[in-house]
Length: 382
Image (cartoon, rainbow, N blue to C red; front, side, top):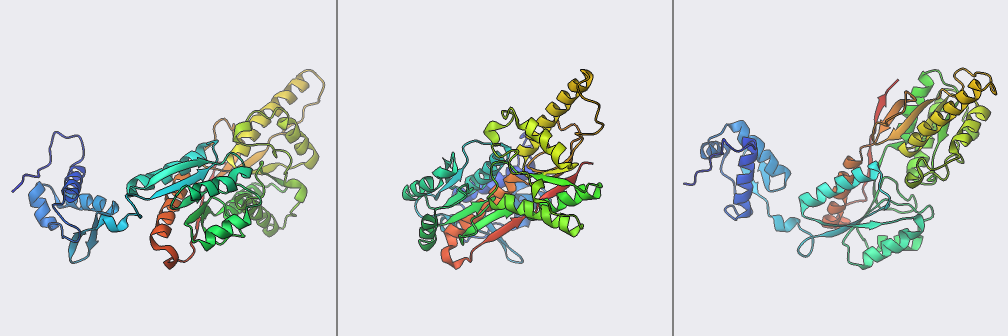
């Protein structure tokens, strides 16, 4: 009998050593697909560890899809070949903006984690601008990719292209936003609920004039749903939905690449505050929130200089604006401006999207169209 005892000098936890050993034994063919692994009692004797250690090791094997734990019967080795895509391995594509911010990075990490776990080849295709989307998608499909994850960007999608993909039953999952005209798999966050909850929080703080600030993307479903939640919260509170407070023009040129490079945006924001008289605002994403923080600092500094020079009378709290924002992280240097955040976990979305795509590739038309909506965590900071 082999001695499978764990090594007390190994810094890895004992359960992980057992997991590694059993994994190696399965990969080496000691246990064929369909074979039962030794019972937990036998494994306790073989490895000379506690039952809890064996259970934790078996849980990892089940997580990795190597075994199937059947209550009352035991644990059986899973046939890995039946889970693979056609060919040696499945090759799928993630089409994403080439300018990577923290949210896109988090999505990529989640997608990659599942791809590595499932032995799936993952290629990245950059879509630098909405005008490139259709050409890049066509090129990827023609290049032999067996499925695609897409963060759609084109405000007016190529209807013919997506109809062809749908009719060909090409596995496609849209992430973060979707095309309402296309009946395809998609996974998004609950954007309307986030916009609603953040606006409600601002109302609870006594604000009655609340502005909403998007950036250069205003047509995508995620932004539209966030504004819809903002409007619903106002209306339910008996407050008017003032279209002039949906400030489409202030940051219409703002994107990741232009953050802190819009030299006159702070003046446009100052003009908006003085003209509209709002006391709170909803930043549709973290790019807007970051730029607003920068601009408010410039506005306050310029106002202070003007007061000191005697050109302007002091205006108490004139530019003290409460802001609620949708973001994938806490924002630095906000100096108390942000009073609430709706956090969207990009890694989770990436993982779920990749799992959805692989499920579509495996089951094809047997699987109904999948739509998933993930909640955001709303954090009140003030």
